[in-house]
Length: 316
Image 1 (cartoon, helix red, strand yellow):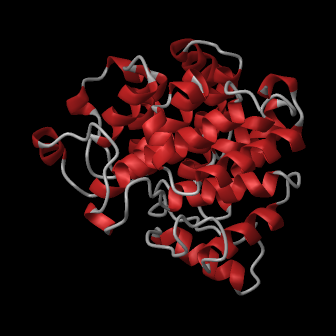
Image 2 (cartoon, helix red, strand yellow; image 1 turned 180 degrees about the vertical axis):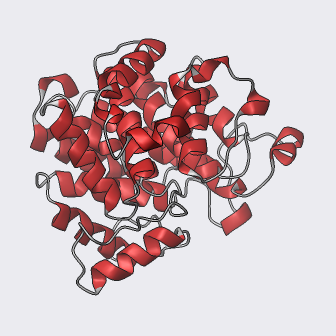
Image 3 (spheres, helix red, strand yellow; image 1 turned 30 degrees about the vertical axis):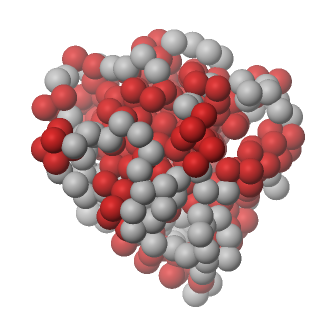
C-alpha cells in the first residue's frame, strides 16, 4: 500500500483528528484560547489515554469494513450494532461516547427494524452523527454516477439520521471530498463538489433544505472565526470543518484549528481530518500522532483490505 493511498490517508485522517479532540470535548472556545491544543493529549473529558478515538472513528471504520464486502445496508447496520455491543472497532474494548439519535437507531436495528426505517426523521434529529462517519463512501464516488452515488450516501446516513438535512450534509461533504481524490486543490474541490450536487439538491425533498446551507454555497471562507459555530448540529459541524480545512495549509493546522474551536471538538476535527488526510496524504499527518493512535496497525490493515476490495486505480 502506497503512503499516498487515499484510503489510508482518509481513514487515518479521521482517526487522528478525532483523537486530538476527545480529551477536550465540550470545552469552550475561550478555554481553548487560554490553553490551545497543540499536540496529542490524553485523559480529560473521558479519562482516556492519548490516541484514543471515539464513536466518530469507530463508526467510520465499521462502514469501511462493511464496504470491503460491497455495498449493503444490512451489512453496514450489522457492523454498527456489533460496535455498539463492544464486539468490534472500539479503541479499548468499550463504547464511551455515542449520540442520542444513533443510540435510538441502533436500538431499533437490534430489535429487527430495517435499516431503511431505523433512522430518525424529525427536524430535531439533525446532529452530526451520520456526517462524522460518512467519509468511506467517497471511495465509491468515481464508480457510480452522481444520482446513484448520492442516493447511496443518503441511505447510509439514514440508518441513523434520515432527515433530508442530514442526508444533504453528507452528500455535500462526500462530493467535495471526491475532488480531493484527484489531487484537486481544496478551494477548487469545494467549488466543484457544490456544482456537482446543485441540480440534485434543487429538487424535493432537498430544495426545502437548501437555505440551511446558504453560508456554504456562498463561500464559507469569507467568514471570520467568530462567525463559525462549532456545535454538534450537522450544518454547524459541516461549516466548521470546511472552514478549518479551507483556511489552513496543512493537515496539522487544519485539525488543530478544528479542535481549538471548542465544543464538539472530536467530531469537527474528525470531519476536518478526513478531508485534510485525503488532500495532504498519510505522510503529512505527524508521525508521532499516528504512532499514538489506538489500534494503528488494525486501521492500516483495514485500509489495505478496503483498497484491495475496491481495486480502483484512482485510490492508489
